Image (cartoon, rainbow, N blue to C red; front, side, top):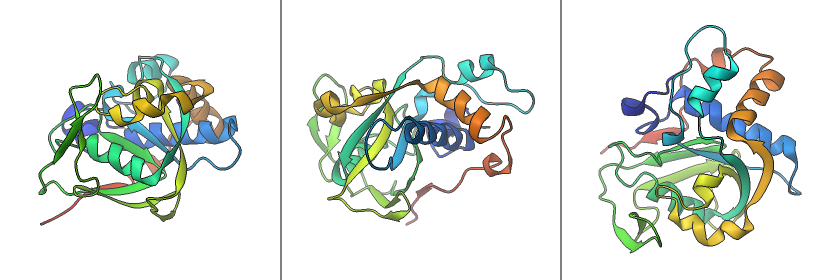
Length: 217
């Protein structure tokens, strides 16, 4: 599964990005930290550091992919905030960016032909909020339903993201509301592989799942 940087997890959806995001979402649902459903997971592509090659999967190979041991957190976010962070995390796409959002439970389109309009600079960050969220990114659906900018969604992310790392500065003001699900990123992937996939990565991850698309002129 493709963990290359460029072209790869920092520029486009990959099957590895799908796999890890699915693991986060699965673990978030299993943890049952909050009442209600867990809708989606967002993985910053720069956190994926290695490809997963054909053959035996070991703890060591998973640790190579996710070497930072980030805690996973659940956040309740308004749809408009999710749109903001997806747009800021793809601000230079299709050029590479470590924040590039690999996702589960979300389908979105990036329009690379529209320039990123900078709004205010995020506190403590080199990145800027989008001045016009939705001008470059269109969210088609979340949790299998049409996107609603006014709805509150439950989203799984890492502590790096909710603390405003990379271009996720829009989450820093909401960090106090994030709640740990009690698992590290690599633990979630291992648990998903063992319990849900029964130790084998099958055909569903032979290619990316078309969750992220680049728009055409």
